[in-house]
Length: 277
Image 1 (cartoon, rainbow, N blue to C red):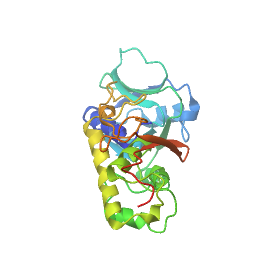
Image 2 (cartoon, rainbow, N blue to C red; image 1 turned 135 degrees about the vertical axis):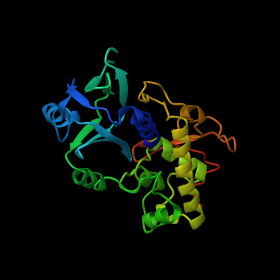
Image 3 (tube, one colour; image 1 turned 120 degrees about the horizontal axis):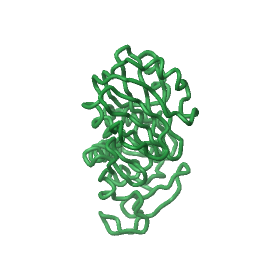
Image 4 (cartoon, helix red, strand yellow; image 1 turned 90 degrees about the horizontal axis):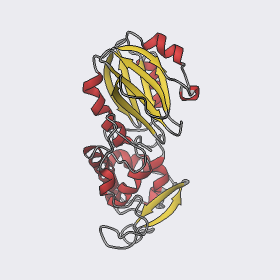
């Protein structure tokens, strides 16, 4: 699933090419369930003639804001990709939304598994209320040791489960949670309230570091992720824990183990990440 680095990479790639560009039309919607609060007709009537004024990100949502405070929010879920392509480029299989632009390009949402969602908000307040109900502090921009300590205080849940909860911290998913816990040398099943101040600081630093490196490497193409140009990222070549079951830990050589936490595969080093502090 695209996580914060993949969404941020896409936002940074699209920003210089979309800001100031106008919408000519909306088409290609063949999966109405991808539009929980709007429709193709609503998108057409609302966005045609509008110009993009910003391309942003909150958690795993990519946000396109238009010149009347209208906002399109895209959540890519498991397999969604946003591709900016010339109008003459043949549509990829599983293209479910096409936004025709006055630049001669089209912004296309391609999603093989049809889990992705596109939301339309008619004001900043409507958008911000929607996101506030779902997202905690942004794990790249807002997270620091003191904030993480306050959020962990009194929490009995497993550490990995909390990191996957977008209302706890926004943007971290399964892959980057495994990588951050490996870097911080913390077991995914540690009770959240068992961490020392030094461990909390290590974890906050590790989260920011793995996300920053993921962005610098243009995301992780471990499954279906592509950037807005249809190109894979490079971070999959640098993973220390995720997807490496049975391979030696890069730090100590112990084989990486896999367990299930919150119905997700979790990869960790049993030597470097002990279950008990």
